[in-house]
Image 1 (cartoon, rainbow, N blue to C red):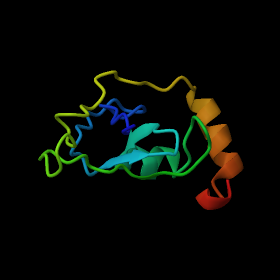
Image 2 (image 1 turned 90 degrees about the vertical axis):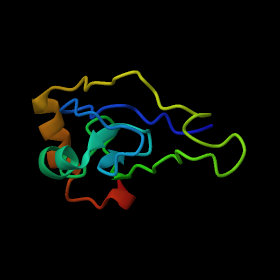
Image 3 (image 1 turned 180 degrees about the horizontal axis):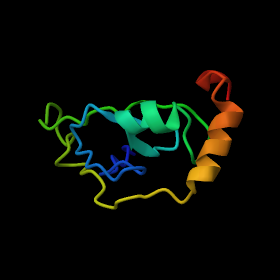
Length: 103
């Protein structure tokens, strides 16, 4: 099973193609751009409270038979936040001082 590679930032809706190095994900694959993670979310996933890591880039070239973006295409389903700015701020305030590995 491969990562979904969601096509957009859930916060600002910026396009994040499969080769985007500024894409960030949490352990549930919630996807945001680096700018939103750093400035708006402060490394707190608004959906689960976890931290973020750079999303891996799926190989465009089929270096191994059957393994590439052509065989496991990225998702085309855009995802958007279901939380209000107040809900996001409240969660961020509660957990932002806790290191991501301890949340």
